[in-house]
Length: 222
Image 1 (cartoon, rainbow, N blue to C red):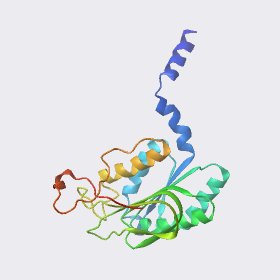
Image 2: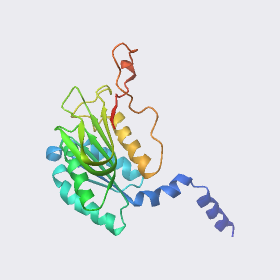
Image 3: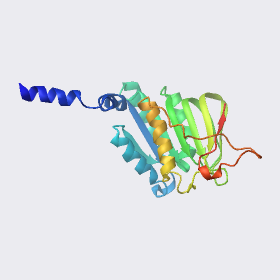
Image 4: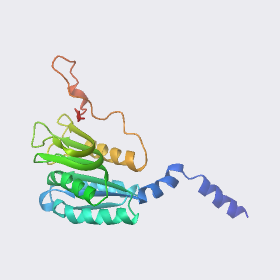
């Protein structure tokens, strides 16, 4: 009897978040798309490890697999195994995201969240997505994403050129950027709030300088 009581106390004393996170995570799936040759986006593997540690199912693949991954995600969505589809891409992987969003919409499986990390070509967005965040480096190779008349959802183009140490080849490895991506995913999967230290609007000439703060500039496309 005493042992049974102790076991019940141990179970009851576990954190509420730990008890509730697994069911929520099990219905979400994050697809991480690497760029060219699978050797320039290895920071996505670090993000995958951190997400899996939270119980979030993750698939990491080259951007060239986006179409077959869309078929896989749509099948999971229609079966009820996946209820929340989340996409993240770096470089060419980010360039492929709008195509994957559009195909998933056509297959009847809307994307809840998509995050692009410095797409190398100009892309246009159509289809349905709850929120599309395009982190790009304005003074580098990255470009904003444009939305078409067929787009439904919220699009944000966020210039992160002021994030310390960020570059096209390091944006997905940068610890600040990794935390931004994970925080956005956690907000969707677990209902957590995104830290207030997130991106801010671009500074205008004459405003007080805040360059030393290292915070990112943001321009939301409405």
